[in-house]
Image 1 (cartoon, rainbow, N blue to C red):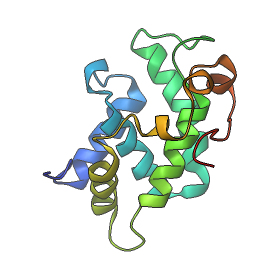
Image 2 (image 1 turned 60 degrees about the horizontal axis):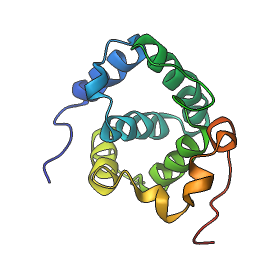
Image 3 (image 1 turned 135 degrees about the vertical axis):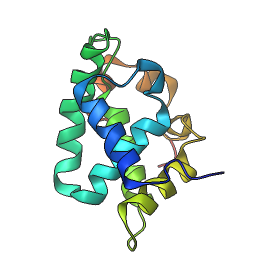
Length: 138
């Protein structure tokens, strides 16, 4: 699998467009989610999750989406993926390598959460609004 990004500026452009709400909705893929999370977690693990919590709903609304009880931002999945990304981030090397490593590992597997969460939990309104620990593979 080729790297997701060839340069740091490509990561910066993705993050910039995401924050501005100008990233096409079709480009807001699982790999793009992972890339933003990995870039922010690599830069500052303490602020990454709060930034994601604020930026994802804003992006959804900027691109015509809604954050409701049944659609849009999902707290449990955001936290789940932030944990996976944190575990996968290389401890050495730069941001470019770290982001590419995370995308290579998890990009093809957007359904990984299904190994950790039953359908009813993942689809629940409670999981959408607040963190729920995995109910499978405990």
